[in-house]
Length: 389
Ligand code: SF4
Image (cartoon, rainbow, N blue to C red):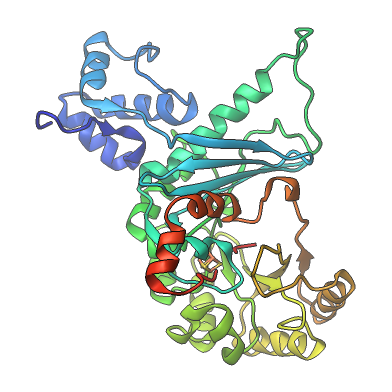
């Protein structure tokens, strides 16, 4: 390590890269597996407790390496148990991580970029513009941090010395599922994403099954194909519209990769996918994409494309000056009924954590509003558009 350079952050190493690094220090390859367990299963934050590693090796680690998850700026717990962290991404930027507890699982929604270039006009993440890609350490660090803080929450005692009561929905459950559905387009940060996914899946790290790790994309067609080759996990696609004319507006990336190409990529992905369906996410926008005609168009789209799929309808989470409104509940139910009657498993996502601004990008947007965004608007002369549901 050159003098003055910061110690390498071990959270950023894929299992293979960590082994190479450990061997480079003159240790046996199995030491990398031990280290991996300490880092990701024991959620270590330092090297002193790594009792099955020789003292000399620990001393080397302390000198050459560090374990740095992103720093928490804010920590909110909703009345429904949803927990949301606002994390420092440097230079006045912030990203969000959300834990959603349910009866049978705990899902962590992870961010991949500070901001996003796709600029869907209904998404508040775009209010920040695009700052930068997160590193592998910052992506997997969100899981490291959440598991550590949730374990601490589980062990916290109340003032009488009794274990703290679980909040509704078993808020104390550990992370059992990961969705790459936070801020940013994960497939536009592919080189950092894949090692993070490998760590999530690796038995000596987080050991999650491929079915429990979902990458959500707005439709970066070439990278969908690469993901199928490199690390096939469950795939969700933010569809939001049944035709190119409307999708060009709602998901501007559609102009580059229109629906015909996207559907073909989904069909190809299914050959490698751990599940036999793609999940199509569809944010319900009042009077924009929620009519009976559009439901029929959507059915025709996926039927003609022969893509095995499920639908997840997402109630829009309004934010100031978005220009969009949430579809009425009865309209969303009618839309869902049409899809269901056509034979598609369809769910309407429960809104969670509304008391803590759980619509992705809202907290980070607040930070940005207080830091750089006002200047950016002044410089570029436009109101940034974009709130991920
Ligand atoms: S919805 Fe997703 S892809 Fe679109 S701007 Fe928001 S974060 Fe980016």
